[in-house]
Image (cartoon, rainbow, N blue to C red; front, top):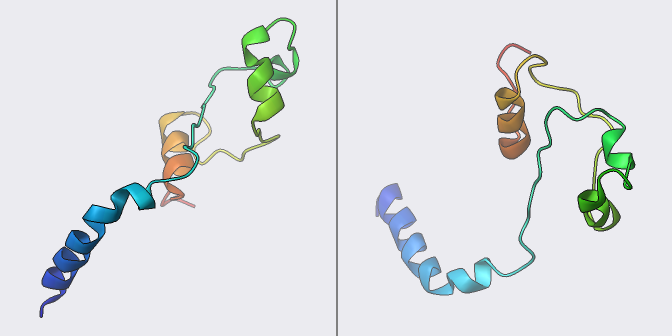
Length: 86
């Protein structure tokens, strides 16, 4: 049996059980661009973020993959891949 046939067979075996594979809490990622570092701690000025801050997770610092552009950094955060020029 070829490798592609094995992959197809595995896929066909897993499709009926996809609901079991997908159970769990969904992950929702907010990428907030253009915020000053202290905006998120001003919960009186930004009341919509109060619940996100109280129930969510935030990082204090991220080393950007490409400091002057946002999209390469979004790509790195979502995929785990870094730039080739490092």
